[in-house]
Amino acid sequence: MKILIIGAGNVGAHIGYLMLFVDSIDEVLIYDIQKDILKGKVLDLSHAGGVLKKDIKFTVVEDLNEVEADIVVITAGVPRKEGMSRFDLLEVNTRILDQVIGGMNKRLIEESIFVIVSNPVDVLTYYFYNKTAIDRKRLIGMAGALDNGRFRYYLSKNIGSKITELESQVIGSHSKDMFCVFDNLGAEGRVELSKKETKEAGATIVSYYKGGSAYFAPAAGVKVFLDVILGNREETVSSVAILDGEYGYNNIAFGVPVEMSSKGIDKIIELDLDSSQKEELDRSIKGIKESLSFLKDKKILS
Ligand code: APR
Image (tube, rainbow, N blue to C red; front, side, top):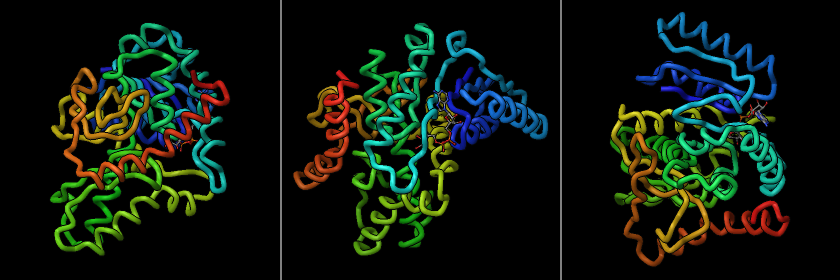
């Protein structure tokens, strides 16, 4: 099994490292425009394989156009910095995604499973779909695995339950408007606090790092997807997916629970939402709609 990681920054390099702990990976190919940093990270990861006694080959990709891979993970992009508006980040990262798409060969787009990590992930996942016309089943945006993991952490901290025993979901937008779904078990105040902390989690990390955004937890989210895709783990995960009528939406991507297999997304699971929950979901994705309109107004998206 070959994995191609595009973007060898904090998130991409940590995903590369975690590949040492995923069964059935033979080769990890990594591409970045910063060639020396790329070479250093690939060599460092190769050394880690030696240390951990893992026969995984790490390879520098010189030219994206020449590679083939089973799964492509895209992390190329600028991380959110303090004070950067949603639209600023969006414009920069759509340009970077354009370069990535333009650099890839047709076969890669036609055959591989793509995992988008670059932010704003819901908008960029739709952008990638719009520009490549890829089969939506092979296109996965990584957000819910991360947000739900954070939610589980805060619920565990505030309620005192074990992380492994919590059943929660995070759907909708990967932003402060995300929709955290959890039966409050009579602990409403502490669940509400956990939701608040989860919604602020990304920004909290940004405020501490001063010049970068989270990378351990996003990389862990990608590992969960790969484990599910490779059959090492059985789980319903929340993924950014292209909607085709599900939840009453078309021509948009946002976080929904999905069943995944080696072919990508097999099925989008439609939660049975009551009217107030449906309203919360609608509110959650308002920002995604605004971002798509922004790109359309600027003629960046058709
Ligand atoms: N092609 C390939 N790589 C690129 C390109 C490009 N056109 N443009 C930028 N990159 C690379 C940079 O050289 C850098 O190594 O993308 C990498 C981004 O790494 P970081 O700046 O460390 O950012 P990181 O924290 O990894 O976040 C990357 O993931 O979680 C999201 O919001 C985050 O959008 C951001 C992305």
